[in-house]
Length: 138
Image: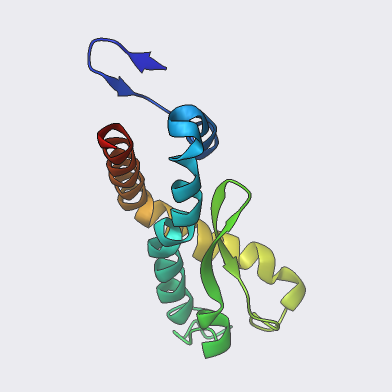
């Protein structure tokens, strides 16, 4: 919703931002934003790889870390109009593979997102601001 006093737009969430920018400059803003989404999610993917490599698991609670394939499998990407971090490895996880989905969400992906949330928000703000400035200057 535009704020006439400050000339800024406050958007809560990525979906309204992409949909809102689709009308600006005939979609000239939303297309580059969609292309940039994987890069904007990369800090979260890097944090997920870091967390996965230092995971503590097992009965003796040793700091073992997950395998290199599992760690390298955390990659930033895009799904529709959302930035995502996915686990791309074919076979992943310690022991109980059927429980690994909830394990990686609780111990890796959600903590990685929380740790990098402010950095990602700042990067999105900066990128969208530069796109708007370019479209107004063109």
